[in-house]
Amino acid sequence: MSCRHCKAIAIEEHFDQKYVAKELQLYRTEGPENTTEALIDALIAEGVSGMTHLDIGGGVGAIQHGLLRAGVSSCISVEASSAYIEAAKEEAQRQGHAESIKHQHGNFVDLAAEIPQCDIVTLDRVICCYHGVEDLVEKSSALSGKLYGVVYPLNNRKVRILGAWENLTYRLHRSSFRFFMHPTEVVEDIVRRNGFERRFYREIGTWQIVVYGRVAEPVKERS
Image (tube, rainbow, N blue to C red; front, top):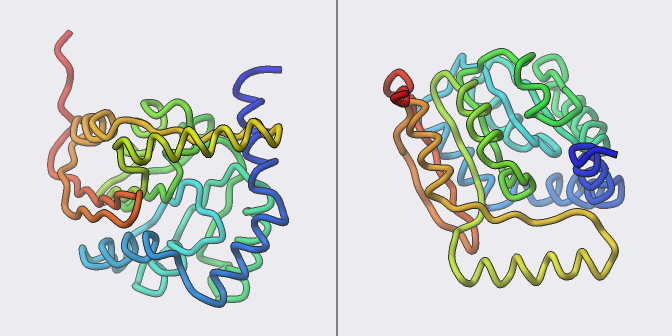
């Protein structure tokens, strides 16, 4: 069994039907989480009418629906949890957006070469679920034509302690799922190297919400 296959199983087991059903019900009764809503609002403030959207780890589709209502023309949702895929399709149908969203099941890094570039790319609480941050951020930011929005953990002592405690809990429950906290500088460096600048930044609790805008051709490393 490959390590990559193990990670896929961990995602499927953690974000199972029971977990996803609770999240979908919460979304329907209370709307997006505060960090997700902050990301949606920041993207809309940049002007999104007529743009295309790639949502990596799209969950139940909160960002997709928010941006479609703001004028985005179409969305691609890439999700590693089959339970999320089914819930997202159900919610898209309920909101009348089924024809505007294409769903793909699998690990984004494995699928990246097959996915077209979109104007907007989002990763909402996805970076902390993925061990290989360089590959994830490099390939996802490369697919963004205009805006790149992320929500991921702050890199401080408090969050490191909380993350360690969370991973201990997973181990005690014999879960293979893990929380990953990657240095902010690593994410920032990759995104800036791919030709983006920060347009929006906000901290809510243990999370940082960042929107980048493309400003230039990617800077090539000297050989």
